[in-house]
Image 1 (tube, one colour):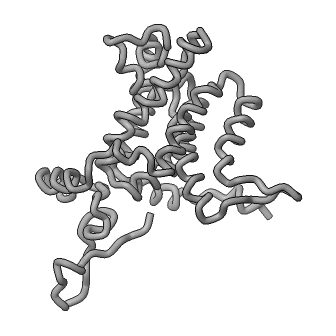
Image 2 (cartoon, helix red, strand yellow):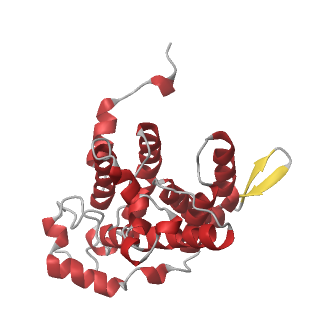
Image 3 (cartoon, helix red, strand yellow):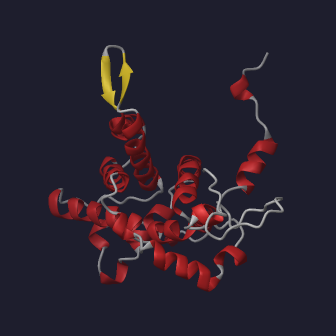
Length: 260
């Protein structure tokens, strides 16, 4: 009898892909598209990579493009498989617009700038990095802080390990087992993830009142399929939820929240 983990259900995979929220779809598409284009356009990989000594006013774009570019197919596929469920969960909890603003802005800019400063100012080195693994560890660290609040420790034999250290342990293991991985880059991503999980950098997202105004002004819920509203308590995960009730709904209490 074949093992259960060897069983593959294409219908469940298809259903999962079709349920991915908008920003997650867009970022994964861009990641795959850039790698595909880098095959015939060889210089594209070097153009997008984070090369510390080449960072200047004219090349600050690298701080946002390096997580989108990958070295090879295995590098791409492993990062996409790891990033997709984490990013989908983040977007479901925070909304499409905040996710887009963060992952095209500070979630690349801040860890990229920190990595560049340490490489150039402390290590006096120029190690090139690229790949979405920096986002993977950012999101893992954020999730670890949430888990730590509910379950502070896990046990390995007689030892109790703080739950929040799980991403750091994983970073160490990967740095030893997988060649050409950036220990420092992963740490920079994890550090920002811890700050986000502790609610120290929520100011990176515009106030919810402004985001609601933008959503309403542009009618994003009506125009964009798979869009996740900022105001999930009112609109649900993908906009206004259908109702079969004949009782008129109060504008104050008609919302239903769908969990991620």
